Image (cartoon, rainbow, N blue to C red; front, side, top):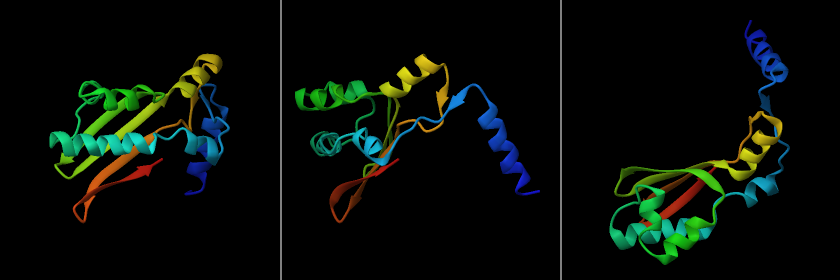
Length: 132
């Protein structure tokens, strides 16, 4: 019974005309991750203003160095979620390539570009970890 349920789900997904799996290798996924410069600028923002940014507009409106680094990323969905003064998650998704694929095929990719970056304080320094 336990193997029957995943098998049925797999057949439903494979037979469905609304989803697709885009061929992506590790290098293309790695290239589409946000840059380290963006992570450094988010930490700079936290140190300069003593708070985490709350939105894309808040981040980009605080100076040229923040505007330039954020304006170049190909993600349409950006979300900052603050947990405390020392911890914040930066979620990104809805990549330009995923949008183009959906327009061309009229299908939603099951393996879209996106993820989140976890920022936290470790030994009096802010560090980050990128999750795919």
